[in-house]
Image (cartoon, rainbow, N blue to C red; front, side, top):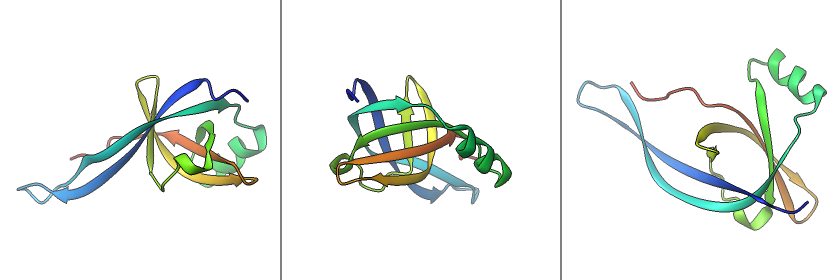
Length: 103
């Protein structure tokens, strides 16, 4: 793996607006190097049956991941459904298409 793609890891805070509607605000973000890897057939079908459709998997260095729940790749945001430790040095981020969380 070459870690040749840029991936933005995002942390949000959740607040309520004046109408009592939950609103997310970007708290912090960091760009890291990643590899986009294929979603396996088994992972795709298993996630679909549980109501979460895994559409992207990214491999990043373990030290770059700090529990973020959203990532952005090529101007599209994804929810990080499951971080998966791969050995000592890598984490796979199993992601689904992000649905709008505001209002």
